[in-house]
Image 1 (spheres, helix red, strand yellow):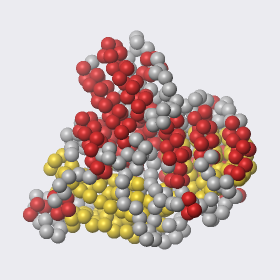
Image 2 (cartoon, rainbow, N blue to C red):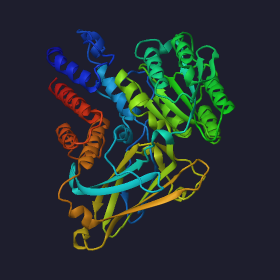
Image 3 (tube, rainbow, N blue to C red):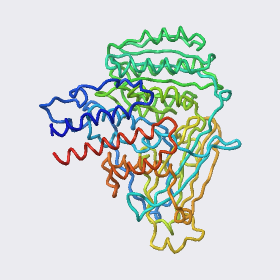
Image 4 (cartoon, rainbow, N blue to C red):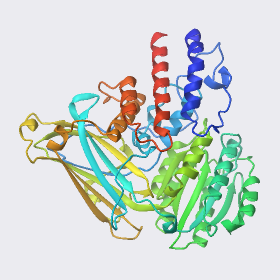
Length: 511
């Protein structure tokens, strides 16, 4: 093994640096020593799993469902992208065998922007769909659902009432944690409107309001407070979270984007530490109009399970920041996504059981809803940010008679509901896809190919029992077909990670 790993090291370093570099300013500026890169010395075996202190919520892949018994499938959208960045970070630290529970395929898909049609007229959302042969099982179809949130002109962006909630406990010490978070907050600060307002609350062994709500026009004052942040002590996160929400409420304005932006590794070990108690807290404030953005940092004690849960229940999104380029992606390139244009967004797909035998939703395992919840405006679902795209895939098994009934048979009906405001009435959208649309499709679209490649890669990393004939070579080919649309080069970076995963799989098989 030693000889093989040493042979692969230069290429692996180059691939990983490329995978987390858009501007050339990544904090992975110089090659790391072998011990630091792989997390082991030459006399030790490679680590078989991700860090033992990191906490992920285990789940099983969605199974195939018989359409004759249950023709309708309902789920909430998921606008997070944390799982993809976590995968990249663990690869960069030498953990090649990921915990399957850390791989959430919907977050791999929604990390990327797709080239979907924009909403028109008064709609805040546009939906689309397409189907073609499933790459990892040629006898099946793959159905892609696409959703795009309205992009906002500068004049349409509501003013912000942001509370920066910063974990300054000892576990946040380091250039890849608090230092990176501080750099991100400074970057965001200088993207905001002068009339936006910022508060800053910190927590370690104690909770402090470091900065009262201050207009961004006083950027020097805000930046001075950010620069004072230093890590030490334990983590009283629950108490701090409550203070942050109360600060947001104290400055609440229904016309503004009222949001808590929390940066942490999630290691709450003082005060309110129960995830259930934290969920109850964030749900109560979400109902009062306060959104959440959760930014995860570090490894070794990353509480991914907690951060994903509270962001889901707090009308928020969860991102993992593993490098400067990811910080720029979240805080600068995609900062408009802090503004929700679609609230409580739900999808419902109904299959015609005369042509569909079985179907399987790929990913979204913890977003599945009962069918009755779809039209119930009191049921919570996720939010979509301005300009954001959401993608979902179904693998579909056709009946034996499907090819004989092409004429006007509907393969699936895609229904979607969202609210323009949290307390508003939901707005329905509908899209139908016929069998003939799928069978007459001469070529996959670039977005279809890319989504299929991402899903294949995710299933391989998850060691999914539904991966079929998927291989890393297949994933690479599909992703390559989808590179015609790649605004910031994020799609191309995925190729480096697929190649690396394939190389390390081959290395393990040989040794």
